[in-house]
Image (tube, rainbow over all chains, first blue to last red; front, side):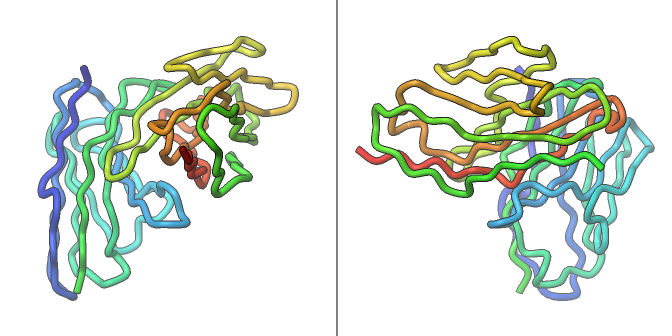
Length: 112
Length: 113
């Protein structure tokens, strides 16, 4: 079965600090995605990638960067964290167009 | 652009009753529709998917039929259980979006004993 893992699972950061959220998938999927989930907003796409070395902006990319150094790993970077970035972040991977996405367990980020 | 609309934010039902969660979509391209379920403090998981017009798809007692004529993919179950309490997302993909999913806002289903 598809396996997507995220680290850390919980993170408390200070305003202005740098935060890196990591995602690893063992499915050999080309596509990977970062979402944030807030009450009342559902799942919103931040960045995505079609393969190693590629990153694309999603619907809400401001304040976030992404890095895809390999097929398996996809990171989300908050260079200067702000309290508005307090949220639950999900990573997902998917194989091809139209295919389902497999989600990781999520990272709960609190920015104080 | 593409969009997905789920009209109910919260649905509260008594165990054993039927349920229908609404999902309509908008796209210019041939659609692929999904229902994801997310239990409390868990990740979203795929429940159903379809790209075939007028064909019913079923999984774990839930079912849905894609109707391209009305741009709908409503989720139904004939008898809900306490364990069905969760957040349900409808999502859309198509060739234009190249694998990206467009999610609806989600419907919280709460089942009472």
